[in-house]
Image (cartoon, rainbow, N blue to C red; front, side, top):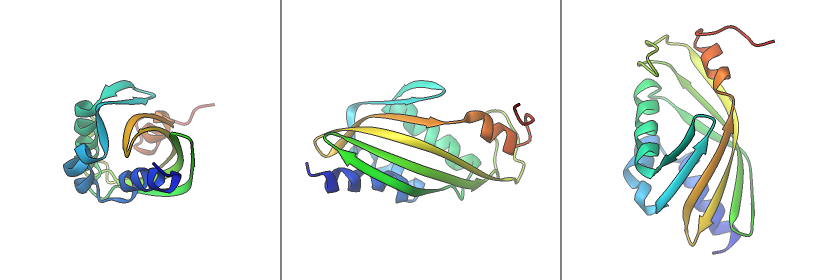
Amino acid sequence: MSLEKAKESVRWFFESDFNDVTAGLDQHITRDYKYHSPSGEEDGAAYIAGMNDILRAFPDVKFQIKDIVAEADKVATRWVLTGTHQGEYMGIPATNRKITISGVAIDHMRGSKIAETWSYFNPMELMQQLGVTGPTA
């Protein structure tokens, strides 16, 4: 797979409507897909469930790609997520607050599909923006 094709596959995740992502995920991830985040490791089914939770809580959620770089079988993406907290999330009732979270994802490609993702972001940033906790020192 060319580096441009690898970046195209990853862009699909970030630039697609979230409903499209959950509906077409099997076309873009391997059957043994693993997702690693500050919360731990998930398989493809758990990842889809988590995305659906985010979509219910933040129905206007959008990702914006700031940078995307590919080399060998890896694609690194610096991203920003925005949305409005309009439904319960992690037991937190809707606050109608707008959120902006930034992070980095590193995807390992296997053929034309994503086999594994390492996603780095600060979960406390989200909690602070939802008013659940104060700023850290």
